[in-house]
Amino acid sequence: MRLFLLIAASLLLSACFETPDLLTRIKSTGQLNVLTRNSPSIYYQGPYGPAGFEYALVKRFSDSLGVRLKIIVEPNASELLNQLDSHKGHLAAAKLIITAPRKARYLFTIPYHKVTYQLIYRSNTRRPRKLKDMAKLAIEISADDSLILVLQSLKKQYPKLNWTVNPDASPEDLMQLVNEGLIDFTIVSSDEIKLNRRYYPELRLAFDINKPQDIAWAFEKNADHSLFDAANKFLQQQQDSGELQHLLNQHFGHIKGFDYVGTRVYQRHIITRLPQFRPWFEKAGKDNHVSWMLLAAMSYQESHWNPDAKSPTGVKGLMMLTLATAKHIGVNNRIEPYQSIFGGAYYLSSLYKKLPKTISDPDRLYFALAAYNLGYWHVIDAMKLARQQGKDDTKWANLKQILPLLRKKKWHKKVHYGYARGDEAVKYVENIRSYYDILKWEVARNWRENKTTPPLKALQILPPAL
Image (tube, rainbow, N blue to C red):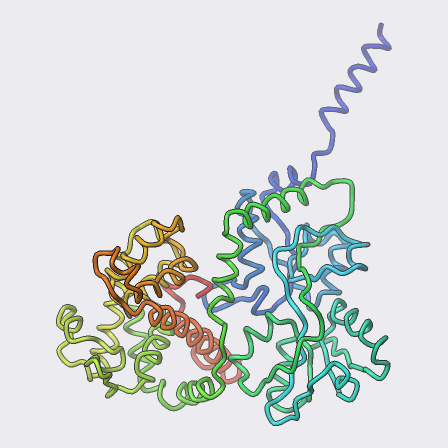
């Protein structure tokens, strides 16, 4: 009996001290450690804090677990996965492509995005046309093991194909080198060129070197799948609810076309025209809780920073205020730059505050920009049409599909304020988002190179991912 009681007590004691699973331990410590790398399409520290698509997605995951997020940055994918092997992070989220060698070593969640690799060259270089042309090129790439696998596979078909790996350069570094003519060719993922081509207007896309490939989060292969299972469940919910597509649209949806001439002119105007107005943009932004760079991007879309600009419809000035709007907000001289900038800032801020409380950032900002261009009540009409079609009327991804319908009689007769050029409002918002991205990049680069005054931090209205 004593022996029986001793064994029972030992078993009970053992059960009490059984090691909890990984998910339970993370919730207990209150911290999720995520390995990633620095890139505009993945994770970076912007003027308004952490940003990037991967960061936004994994932050949602940590929030769903009720824990804080710790980001651990590694220089490249290979080193990142080595650190995962060394238990330095709970998972790796860095736009990791699922390859056969990687699947043999790691657990991958369900895919949540696709990318392809693309050959990049400079504008004054002869464009390669076919994959076989790559065998004649001097190609420099970053230390990306998935890209190397793709190239090794191509080398079987094209034995003369060669490349140089630069272990110290990121894809963004190599794109800059191509843009400056210091190297001839590089290969980067479609997301990276999509985001960065606006900043390096001399870059040209030759062709895709492979078919689109799935990307996912990576986990160690072990018996404890608690965190892995939670991640899969989270990603599936994000897909099913449409939130994943919304997040993709938020980060990449406004970068569809590319205007080489327009971007070059804009970059020149940042140097030649913006400085005389920047102090007013900064002051108006601070006074109205709006990012000064957003106001400057709006003004460029409106007038190309020409204070004497005037449209055929009678709107005038840097912020292209209508006579009625100017009168309403107390601007008596629309051509005077100071009044125009402060009037535009005040008007945007008032629209932002006026919108229904159900709309949250960053969508709230996009709605306010659309209302600035189209009129507040036309935006409310578009929200009504979205609801009639069973769409979430608080998401910009949905509203930009609905706004163009206001041009069509079939639809605008169903709403109170009728016809409107909704498609122009969509283009207006998307252009401002791109102008903002480019300006933010130029200001940050100028600060790094010249140690000028860093950009003011946003006070309220501007979300991390504009």
